[in-house]
Image 1 (cartoon, rainbow, N blue to C red):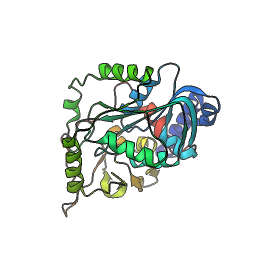
Image 2: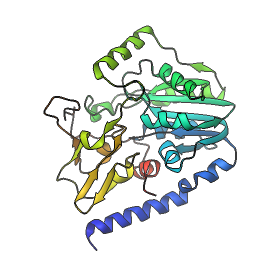
Image 3: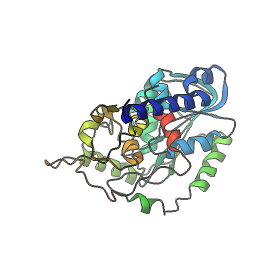
Image 4: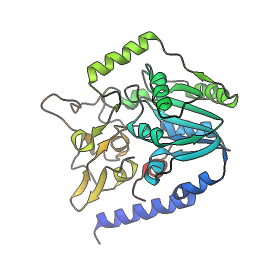
Length: 307
């Protein structure tokens, strides 16, 4: 047996055992009995998982949207249902759009908390429009600022030094939710104009947002040791450990779970000679980020598409 095969078998076995003991492989059982508060989340580097856990508290339940999508489980019932996701270009990840269109959320109170790193613009209004169109209107929609993990523009080491008052902001949101406040965070005309300018500059489809191609966006260097971490943390399962090393292909959310969690920094942005984005640049190629309250195993359990 080769070293690569042994690593692959051990990693898969360990993750399967961990998911079984934590109940992740039995999402149906979580949904069979009515819970007071269930929070659905999408995470790439742990920020949203951390927020979801904090808002769920000891009595609540957290469920991964990538896992719900994989198991085709869209009917969820609870007293309160929350949704936590990161905004990309002020918009939700495409997988979150896919999920809310198929979801049947039954609750007396529904809330959404959107995380961002620098600029939220009109993210609240965007989500309100998407969720209402899908028949899943939310009573409360707010935002919270976190470490910005957008590698092309931000140095992760510098971002981690900034006090963004996360505990205080979480406490305020938690208080709102305890009181079942019905409120949508206000959006200014300036924020709407900023988003419109961004969309013109980026050329993104407003009905899709960031949905790239993994094979066109990233490359794996010779620094890769075939540890297989990328094959577990990608919420779309785009990475595969083959006899010729790591291969990638498929629609990419641009969540950066792969590049941020590679221990060898072997995954890099692909350079394009024709000037198309991404251009391969990073603010600090030697700095990476994962929320300090979230482990690598947590991300594997949240996003793994292989079990």
